[in-house]
Image 1: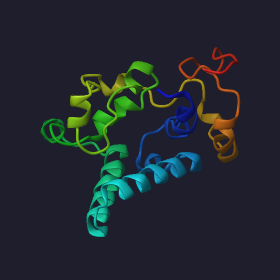
Image 2: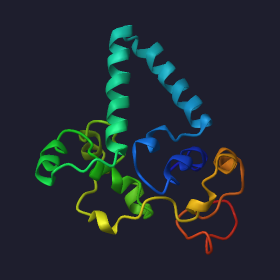
Image 3: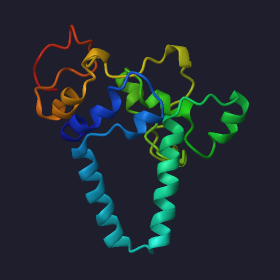
Length: 168
């Protein structure tokens, strides 16, 4: 985890419920950085407009899907997850447990987590608590979230009461 980038991406993770709206919940600073990175990719790779449009469409649909709270039949999802990121797989990435959050990063194809050894499975859904412990739901207000990257950071992985102060 890169601390400066996490300050911005944390806004996406403090959402206490994982659903399609989570896929829209990004700090404008992260969006600007992402757009800059994508612009650099376009310049370096030089895809045609149609290839870029197909890529962005697949990427966004994948993001909407794996952030959704859709519950697929387990057997079907097990097979589907051999190829793409499914909601159950990505739920682990949004866990309040640091080790679980630091897994399942892939956006569309599961192969990237397999190759980078960041794939994590087998955690029962009822044991996964979504969000960031140091930033409880009652602090999920627009101004609080927009200013979050610029404020003193709490210890993300401790509850708000025990997170204390100090930059982490």
